[in-house]
Length: 277
Image 1 (cartoon, rainbow, N blue to C red):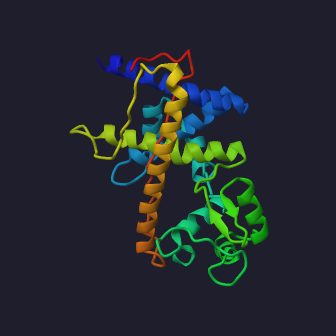
Image 2 (image 1 turned 180 degrees about the vertical axis):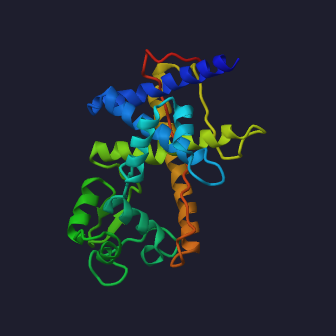
Image 3 (image 1 turned 90 degrees about the vertical axis):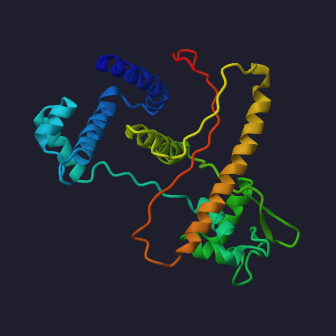
């Protein structure tokens, strides 16, 4: 029975790995490099999640759990402890400006929406916004880029207005990393959490709607409707998160943590992916 369950889990992971392998091949990452990070992850999780009385799992137990040699476990643990597995994903100045334009009271109108901002007229101006939250990016350069990507328009009076709240990184590598860290990782972590409790789901929200019988002629319309609805929902959650951020603004941030809500639309385009709904 246990072997049958293991086989089912491995079959599911083989399906999940198809898009991952597509990404890795696109970036010229071979099996040996991918295997190395898989082994690091095995050692990291086995060491930190299966210790006794709050202490890391010892090397012998990690070797037994993972099937790696004790020498290999020691090598990988040394790399992990040296910080060679750290990953930092930072928001872009453009994304930060758009976020703050929707969040900071100084840049909102009386209805709580992003105000039309003069380019350079003291406090509450676009230049003031960029100076506070845009790092070392000059206001003029920020204005030019926001207009170029269609997030901001400039009226006849020279005031700037937000017309698109989100922005996709122009560098597809940045886009990929952000998507993996902020979408794929939270979704998989939620699945783990909800499956870990033997008495029932852990209670974290995890919903999906699917159909295996959509006419291909309807996909374009369905894709557009899904995009609009998911975009509206994502913005509503962004507003909710910003409201909670404002509750403790300026206070000690040592007790903060990360939350994420994932919304997505999917069409199967891989004819070789083998699964049944």
